[in-house]
Image 1 (cartoon, rainbow, N blue to C red):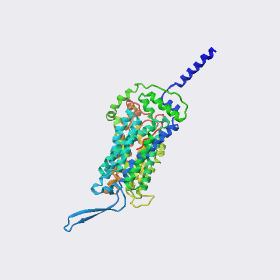
Image 2 (tube, rainbow, N blue to C red):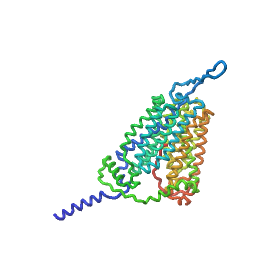
Image 3 (cartoon, one colour):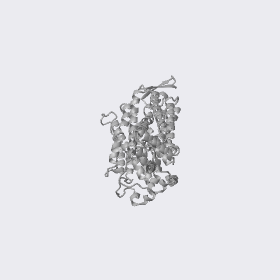
Image 4 (cartoon, rainbow, N blue to C red):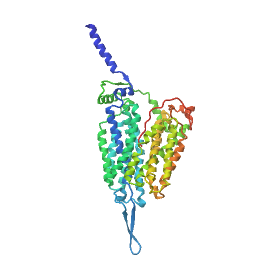
Length: 520
């Protein structure tokens, strides 16, 4: 009887110790479920939000469509001009026809598009550090809420000035929540699923562009279209309210108990019988990382290897963005139905993702040759459009070649994310990606003005895209290959023969890791 009484408490203590095993976050996620039913639903909400964000990004393509017009001048007998009567040849309702954005006022359409991309740049700069400081969920929900509010301001803007200001604010929120949304899709799941969730995010953005083209076909008045495109944001906001905070962010901030609560909640919703989790306590071991952040951007300038890499990468990202958004925003101005063109410019991106995954992992292509090749092919496709007449056949037309260019630059854009992250040492990777992202947004700001260069010559926009793609592709060959090579962890490692070479590096035996890409 005594021995039995002793054994039972001992068994209870052993059970408690077994369930109280201290583990790191990756171990805990494997126990909870790396991509269980609850995470699938949460990621689905975040991924589908990309449809709303794509609609806002492409809104100016349809609401800013400029039909052909005729101007009839009325004069008195003495030759004094009394008035001008503008007649549009196509019965459409856009901001151009409502506010007569023609002739000297035509630049305002491109300006509204550029203001949106300027907002993206500001949003990336503000929301990224803010989400690192106060959390992913509050920043994401606040940004989404205000994007919906400003989206309705766009739809009901009484003047062009209000419309333009609202596009800047919508872009600011769109850029901020796009970044946080992507991070959340990664941080809810195990690392083995990062490539999949990153690809899903980018693919859904492309599908969103196609759906916006279809929506524009059925709802053509610009105010109704802007309202309909914005209303989906209300649904996604309501679905996002119940999402938990990122357990990875909580853990990184030392809020271990809250991270354990979120993980236990996920386990419960996944149907896993996990009653207790105990994560390793995070100390101040990463304090050194924060000291390196302030000098990060400075190192990109003063370090001889990083300086050249950064200059080349900034131009590559700029060219990718200029060609990608320039071709997409010009979809409404190419021959054929503008609604079909917008849809096709979205759908043509989808094959880019398997193309990337195939080529960048082949030893005869790798990262360097793949990104250079796709950029040169994009530039070459744009070059070919200058030799094709406007009314050519369906198979070989300006539109079909422009779609090939869009496919190629989409592939290059996706490679740029993984390639850039591998070219920078761990201690300075965030700074490098941040600078390249800012350069990318500069390309986006200039992109809306390129299609309007058709007023100078019909081939001028494609000439700009051709030169940008070809020059960026050639410059990309100056970068070293990173396939099957270990990434540098510190700045000192860049001084070794394996990392300091600009054109090529000696091959090393190293197993390649999974990769993931962000949405544009």
